[in-house]
Image 1 (cartoon, rainbow, N blue to C red):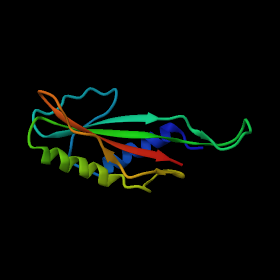
Image 2: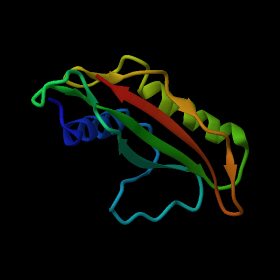
Image 3: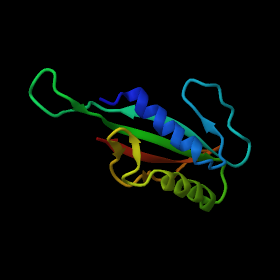
Image 4: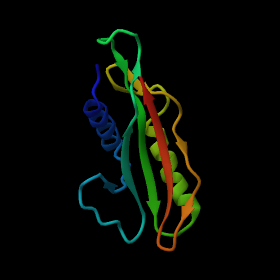
Length: 129
């Protein structure tokens, strides 16, 4: 069975290997957002695995969400949209993650959230076995 640690490691490695050029804020690690430009913030949200059988020792299938929030200082919406599309392109449906775990649907973006000092769009990547 694939563990959450293996899935998270693989997803993080895939994001880093994509070399998108944006600073990345990782959970639990100090990060100061840049004064200009875009940056990414990562969240890993594993869900309850699906139990495939009735037996107590049956296998389960992992599933969950890997969410990358794209942030920017207030500017043209086109720049943040380009960053969102770059993140989505890294994780197309069917992308292998670990063992039989795959991206289970095309990544989707939330609505643009605008605050006084920043704007953001969350990109959600769903995975399952």
